[in-house]
Image (cartoon, rainbow, N blue to C red; front, side, top):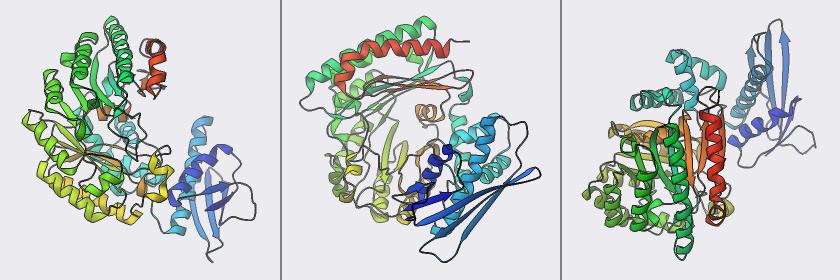
Length: 501
């Protein structure tokens, strides 16, 4: 869809307008210059009358004989600085742009103008300011055109997060750890995480683990010296249970020796997502080191789907490994399901929910499929037929109804680019089984220190809230060649972030 936008003088508006256009059209091309080939022309005008500004948009389409019009009024405060004034104007332009596209396409965007990953952060901002929920909803609806349904979801999630972590806003001088293990049995078609096939790469695994142990020792010593507490620890990847039970045992021993007061960390999670990596011996190792939360991820209970997306385990194996973990004493297990996998519609997703009902894990994370830029599925999109917007929404409604009926509550949410139906990913949990790490990583209330391959660190300044990003390389070879440098760099950033004035 070629869209010509008239009336845009500030180039900073082009990208956010393009992101809105992408919500409506699979392939959109937005231009501020008229080449005479546009399918749609949208004219945006700005008019000032006394203290009020009126922003209007008119959409004209070659395939439509009627005009579509939207307007937005605002009263800019004369005391606003340039940055705040631009944000106000930008939102007004996005609002009218969104509304004319909704009118033209008949598609209502329930998340309104929001294209970012963390909409719950908006609600937390209101919460910290002491703004009442009804006023927060009114302002978010007026400014961002968010639907009542999504506003209610934001309120429920933030309330739940503050029950799970009452001191959420007071953890800025603590940190959480993310430890990345970049190996999997095979790579899933939708995946862009660091995930290298472990078979035949044992030498690389040994080298990688040597570097990771070094990082853990150096980082742990710095945390001890500075008396910095750890709130939660998360082993992700890849699949951390791809390595051997002996390697896991040594890794967890290093964890306890290197880092301060691990016995009192609030939560330790191991992403044992691939059932084909789980053995009784590995579960016993995790129990030995007090790992109190794991994930065993079916993604789907339809065998044809698992084959199509490159997961080589069977449906029966998922069920058997879940039962094995339970028999071995694991009492906080998360399972993931994905809405919109290739070839799946409402019947297949309902089947996955029916199978989940037989197990009743402590938490269930419902993802909506996202076409990530570097994934196999995106590179060969024509090979993977997925459900349309309406059916994807029905699947999400099934998930919401099922979780409510079975005593799960939503406790964290995030969104992604190119996500089907412009929907979201939601974590649901039984009472008291919310993942504390998931809340902390999404709400960006404290520093997350990433160790290992592809691990992204997010340094949050405890006073200003400014976020500094730093990522280790994704491939084991580059990591092995430079882990000492990356360790030193992160320590320097920690010094600047947590202990600067």
